[in-house]
Length: 334
Image (cartoon, rainbow, N blue to C red; front, side, top):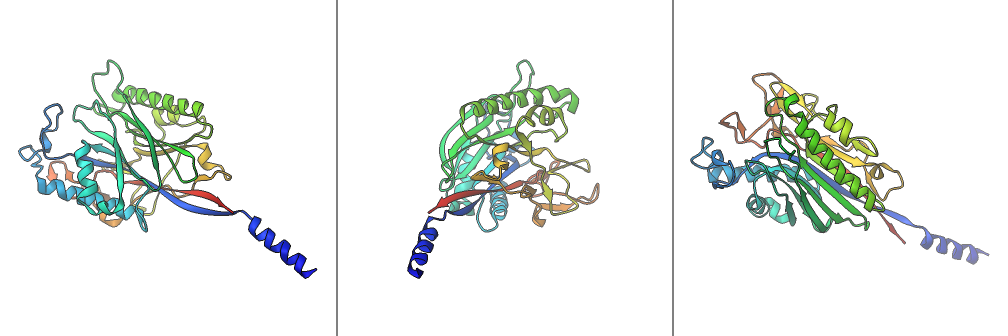
C-alpha cells in the first residue's frame, strides 16, 4: 500500500505544471536632441554643429552618448531593459554610436528607427535585446495632418515574438509639439492620435491574442482630448506612473510646472490575471535617480538636468525624465 501511495505521489509530482516567470522591463525616453555634429543639408540641424549657435562639438556629442547610456543602464538595475523606446533621435549614426561607443556595447542591443517628416530630422527609435524580443518586422507611418503646414515625426511600429511565443506590437510616437499655442496646435495632435488609433484597431482585428504597447511623448497630458478621448478607452488603458520623489510629479517641467507628456498605453490583455504576458501592477514609474535632477533655481524644487538649459550648456541628460514598466512572462514547464 505504501508503495502504491509513493507511486501516486511521484506521478503527481511530475504531472504538476510549474510556472516560471521571467521579467521583461521596458523604458521610454525623450532624449532631447540627440544630433550628431554634421550638417545635414536636407534638414534644419545647423545649430547642432560645431559652428552652430550651440557649439555642438564632438566632445559634447560623445559626452551626451555616455550620459544616455548611463541612464539606460541605471534603468535596468540588475539587467538593462528588454526594450528602450527613444525620441528626438537624428539618424542611424547616433544609434550606432550609442550602442557601440558606450557601455551599452556589452548589452547586444539592436535598433529600429522610423522615417520622419520633421523639418529638423528627428525620429523615434527602438532598442531591443534579441534574446528577449525576436524581431519580426517594422513599419513607419506618417502622422502629418494634410494642409497643416508643419511636418512631424512618423509613428514607428515594430513587432516581434517574446519567449512565450506571443507577438508583441510596439508603437513609438512623438506627436506634434505645442508650438504656436496649445489650442492652436491641438488639431495636429488629434490627427496623429486618430491615425495611431486606426493602426491599433487594425492590429486588434488581425491578431488572435493582441499584445499592444504604445509608448510616446504625445505632447498632451492624460486629460487632453488626443489621449483621453481618442487613444484611451475601448480596451486601451493609459497607465498612470508613480514617482518615488515627491518633488517630481511629471516627466517634463516647463516654467515651473510639471506635466505628464510621456505615456505608456496598453491593451487589456496585459491586465488579465490569466495572461502569460502581464503588466506588473504598480510597476509603471518615472525614473527619478538623483543624478537626473538638479535644483530649479528659478521656480524652486527640482527639474531635469538637461543637455542645454536655454542656450547654456549644462552637460546633463534630457529635458524629460524616462518612464519604466515591468512585465512578467509566464512559461509553463512540465
